[in-house]
Amino acid sequence: MTKTYHINLNNSVAFKNQAAYCVGTGRLGLALRHEYLEQLKQVQADIGFSYIRGHGLFCDDLAIYHSYMEDGVEKEEYNFRYIDMVFDAYLSLGIRPFVELGFMPGQMASGEQTIFYWKGNVTPPVCYDKWRRLLEATIRHWMERYGREEVLTWPFEVWNEPNLAGFWQDANMEEYFKLYDVSSRTIKAIDPGLKVGGPSICGVDDERWMRCFLEYCLENDVPLDFVTRHAYGSELPEEIGHYVYQELRTPEQFMEEPLGSRRIIDSFPTYAGMDMHLTEFNTSYSPRNPIHDTNRNAAYIAYLLSVLGDSCASYSYWTFGDVFEESGVAFTPFSGSFGLMANGGIKKPSYWTFVFYKDLYDEAVARAENFVLTKSVEGNLRGVAWNLDADILLRFSVDVPDGTYFLFIKTVDEDSCNPLKLWLAMGSPAYPKAEQLSLLQEGARPHIAALRLAVEGGALEIELPVAQNAVCFFELQGIKPEVDRGFKPEKVGL
Image 1 (tube, rainbow, N blue to C red):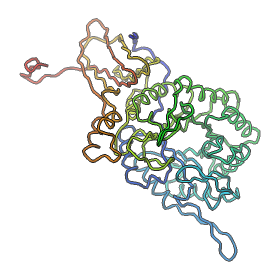
Image 2 (image 1 turned 30 degrees about the vertical axis):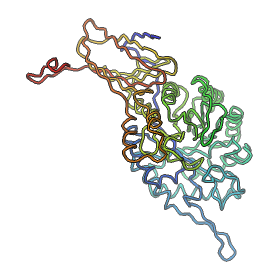
Image 3 (image 1 turned 90 degrees about the vertical axis):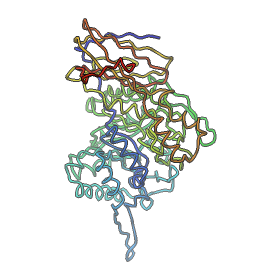
Image 4 (image 1 turned 45 degrees about the horizontal axis):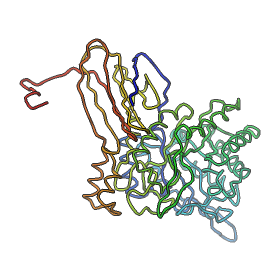
């Protein structure tokens, strides 16, 4: 199939590119590990996310909260050593925390219900005054350590997916509203300039939860600076061994959830236009689904990144790397986990989707179901194209001044950049040796093609083949060729 587009460089189309605003991570305690920080360092070098969001701030592995008895009186103390190490590392890599307030410290919990391999407690606090004092002590510590102006740039989100019984005991809406109420008022009492939001819902009964949450905040004058939710694109799982397999909804079906929340928010005059952050999104919601390691995942995400900015202030891919243990420790480097990077420093196809979007210019001149095209102040072009269906040929007719141009194309498809396929071909080793890892890293790079084009008559034709499940980055630059004296390319077959 061929799709033809005429590109007028004087056009301007709406396109809000927030692909690099925020990214997700496994629980924060994982940031104390070498492999985790090495992956994040590489991600920041290539993509440079502004914020990072993860679970487990108050879980026992970070050891912030402690209570003890002294002379028959219960007393509290706080230990910020580990969280300082985590946030120091983040800030040194140029990424700020998007703070998720959860889960419950064991000594403060009202029950024993936990979630995940690492047992995050998901019950309400036994005493809300204890929770309030914990928030106050933690945030004041951060202000002292990092400075007020820095901490004022950190968004604060109350809990994670309380509408799901696995993440909040009984999915008790009334109890969550109480948690949010206490948390948001505590935060604003520390400093009115701090930003707080919720309800961080996902999927189940989400429309009722969103509407009731906004009604509660409005009727009770509860602080609310932004709204959060999550979205995933998969159906119910089929479990086979260590893995699950799920049918994907179409990207258009995926978008129904964030667009529905946008409509609900805007139906309240007080909250109309308020920022909505999609603080988690991906294809599958399971960290055991091999779809995350595929080229199809990369193409699906490429479409979403082209449209999510229409309704969301930001959208945070879950997650940057595969040092991740919600379902336990992975048995193989390609385990179906969420990350853009597989363990061993292997960049998955979806990694490049984010690199490509980060490299786009600010102004868009064209956008369609398979591509977005941007231009620089000088008139150079950069675009991203993707394809989930049968192979297509994108044909662009571009009005440009006469001259010489350099066109290069980076392609990520099932043949040219498919480390999962390469790993399977080498026998799918669970514990790759150094030379195998090196080969997998080499096989995880885009294919690059380049052309020099001469334009006479003000029209340039670009043909861009995009295979099924492929993502391409392409750039057109005006150039003034320089040739060293005596160099004749034709003499060497060029």
